[in-house]
Image (spheres, rainbow, N blue to C red):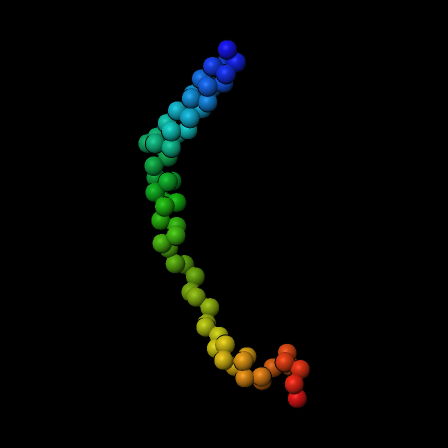
Length: 64
């Protein structure tokens, strides 16, 4: 009996989430959120040349 009630509660919760996700009111905000990964507001930082670090010009190597 308890497992049947629990199953019905989960089914109603699932259907509520599906109805919320596909509601017309939420469509615009979901469309905007879907475009976020495609937007490029900030320029990329300049690319550092890693070869300079490998040449031993820095203090990190310990060799003199």
